[in-house]
Amino acid sequence: MVFDKILIAYDGSHGAERALMKATELARLCAAQLVVLTVYRHHSMLEASLSMVRGSVEPGGNLDEAMRGTARDAADYAKSHASDAGVARVSAFIKAGQPARTIVAVAEEKGCDLIVVGSRGLGATEGYLLGSVSHKVTGLADCPVMVV
Image (cartoon, rainbow, N blue to C red):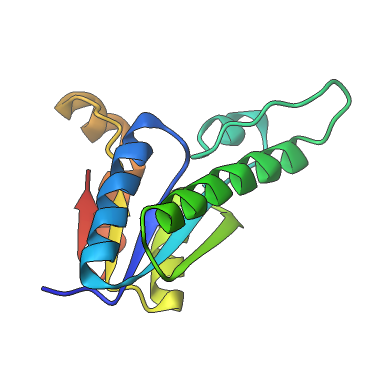
């Protein structure tokens, strides 16, 4: 199967880094467009702890701005990596929202025919009880999802 547009969900984690390598390789081999997406979320301290992206805040600073800045840095890094690796068409986006639903919504909006996400590596019991972004994406997406 050849893919035309691949979405990589990237948050800077080890799993996302491995997924970025695989998505970059696939995009290069298929001459596909690579869409980098970094999702951040902040509405409360609890919800911020569930975000794909972790930011740090200066005392008196704005947590939303810190999360947005960290997300932008991650997306820019992934875009630069893909371009340097020979992917001709790369775009990067940051979005605020619930990670799994946002990933699927952006993939649909951009017309992506593959989503690549990293695995958190949770055990079967923890994954079942807590869920994970990759697990939720596989359940929500209409297109194929590659979990790396």
